[in-house]
Length: 308
Image 1 (cartoon, rainbow, N blue to C red):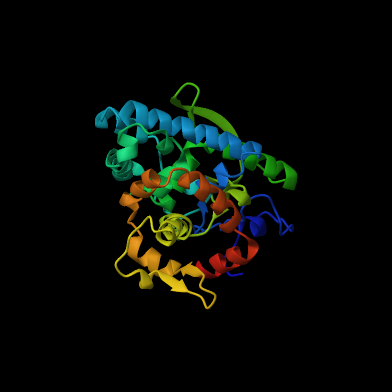
Image 2: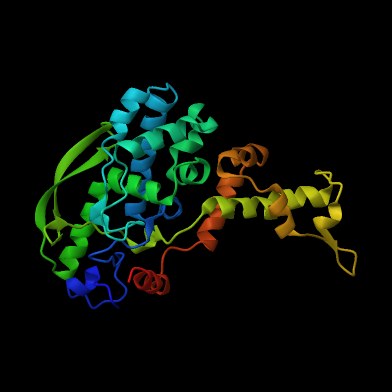
C-alpha cells in the first residue's frame, strides 16, 4: 500500500475497524451515504445523523426555500465549511471541495429549482431523497453537507475509536448544527491530530464509493413499474416488440434494457416518476439496502490504489 492510512499511522493492526480507514495525505474517494443512514436506523449513530440531517433540511426548506428567502438562506448555508478533516471526496490533495460561498449558492438554487422542495413536499426533508431528486446536489456535496451538519456526532464516534485503540487526542473547537435550537453552535471535542490538523472518522457502514443513484432509480422504475404497465397494456406502444419478447410457451417478458433506454429521465425529471408511481421512493430505498452495500475492504483497496 503506497499511501499511508489512518490505521498505519496510529499502529492499528485490526483490519476490520468500525471506522473507515482513510488516507492521511490525500482524500479517499468515498462518501457519507444518506441511503446507508436512512436504512440503518437501528444503529444509534445512524439514527442521530438521520434526525439531525432531517431537522437541518426541514429548517432550510421551510424557512428559506419555500419562502424564497435567498439572502438569509445563504447566510444559513454559509456555515457549511470545507470538511477537510474527514479526508473524503474527490479532492485527492486534501484541499477540499467543501461548500463555501459558491457551493452555498448551488445548494440554495438547486433546491429552489426543485418542484418538491419549492412546494414544501416532505420528501425533500430527507437527505437521500435530496441526493436522488435534486439536480445540482451530487454525492460529494451531500456527503460534505452531512459531515458539517453532523460534525459533533462523528467527532464523538472518533473519540470513542481513539479510546479503543489508545490514540492520543487533543481538545478542538468544532461547529455543528443543533436541530433542537435550529442554530449552528460550537463545542469542544477531543480528536486526533496529524500534521497540525485534526481528523474526524466516519463509521465504515455509513460510507460508499462513487454511486449515481439516479441511474439506479431509473432502472428500478423501468424494471418494476413501467415494464408492468407495458405488459398489462396500460402503456400503449406502437413498437411493442421492442419492449416485449415472447417465450416459446407464450409467456411475455419485458425487455428492461430497452424500456430503460426509452423511458429513463434526467435527474430533474425524476419527480415525474415519483408522482406516477406512488410508493416508488420507499420501495427503492428498500431495494437500495439489499443491492447497494456500504464500502468494503476490496473496494477500499481499489481506492487506495487509485489515489497512488
